Amino acid sequence: MQTIIDDIAAQMALVPNKGTVASYIPQLASVNPDQFAISIALTNGEVYHAGCAHTLFSIQSVSKVFTLTLALGKLGERVWQRVGREPSGDPFNSIVQLEHEHGKPRNPFINAGAIAIADAIMQGHQPKEALAEIIQFVRFLANDDSIAIDEKVARSELETGDRNASLAHFMASFGHFKNPVDAVLGTYFHHCSIAMNTQQLATAGLFLANNGINPHTGYAVVSPNRAKRINSLMLMCGHYDGSGEFAFRVGLPGKSGVGGGILVIAPGKASIAVWSPGLDAIGNSKLGTHALEILAQKTGWSIFGE
Ligand code: GLU
Image (cartoon, rainbow, N blue to C red):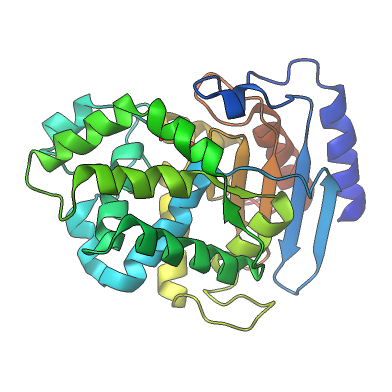
């Protein structure tokens, strides 16, 4: 495994076009695109790293896997009254689909869906309390109490968040929200601003590769059935309108973020985190996807066969 990922990291260093970093906030625009990291946490407890696996980055939409898990824990099946379970085929921040579907987002991983999930998690709590719960949950999953929110990123998200605010107000206009829109947006922007490295992220995802149990800590996070369902949503919806392409090339459930991180689950085998900040045209990590495609080929881990 170490040889495979060392080779992948070496190959990635030679790729001339590393994609374009997100430019909508200064904290992402200023990240050096010439960085690559991969961590693989196997279900047998072994962990492997290559590249800058200890460099913190903004996990952005990867956080939506954790908030969905938390919401399912709190609301159970009622979560599906708030969001659907279908791929969107539209960009991550699309507003047209919401109108057609009467303010119910297609899935929990597009922006509108994740904002609705933030509202569900809050359940009348102040944003601070909801956020404390989210960050505690992520720390618990990663078995690492040092994980924190990057407040500067959160502030920038808020300042540039007109589109997300539009999505939220639009949903609220259907009477779907239980909390004030600004409070929900505050929760959403802050959980997108959690900073992690690939080592922490791979560990945090491990319960999804191991029937809901984190093998490092022995804690059962979700039932095997729920882990399976979260994985299926990641496969279908984890890369926005690039989800089909990702399934075609990599063949594993994954969730990307505009910070360049991707969390990928090889069920029964491993949780994999990659990070490279340069994005493709859809907003998914260019080198990250490329690296995962090679990894899936070399390991035969694609859920669709070798
Ligand atoms: N905070 C970002 C937004 O809502 C997340 C987008 C992403 O990672 O895809 O615009």
